[in-house]
Length: 204
Image (tube, rainbow, N blue to C red; front, side, top):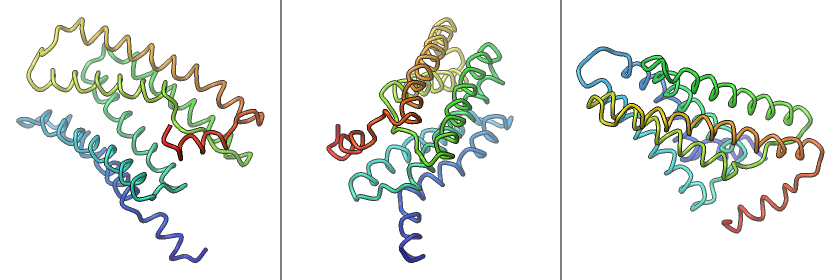
């Protein structure tokens, strides 16, 4: 493969959108903590733009066959950086959710450590599973509700946010617990990667 062909596999619209999401992270943090009028609104708009580009890059990658190995690395990095920045920012502003932040960071650290261990022996992690996607959706719903409350005041009773925060914590622990046997099976050679690729290609 020539250098031009390698660059074409890296410089694709989905990958550029992933880079764009990474660039949005510091702007979100600056606006969230910058004490100016409507700064929470601007920070939330950045998060919405980030979410829309996340959905868009996936659609483009599948529709126009732009799925690449590099994209499978940069896309989750952009996702995790965005989630981590928002979780940390909200926990600083609402200390009651610090436990949730710690759980989230521990889970992501363990996932990263597992992935590194697999790469070291020439293997790769599995694709995202339903429990990981469920955890992501619940976390985003929680974060958006907190951001809305930051914008308009107590938009929801605080106990609603507290219960949703507990649900996030449960989903995080559940997700990590479910991923552990997957990592173990991949490492031991018991995991069927070919079956996973076939299911992805068939749209299952």
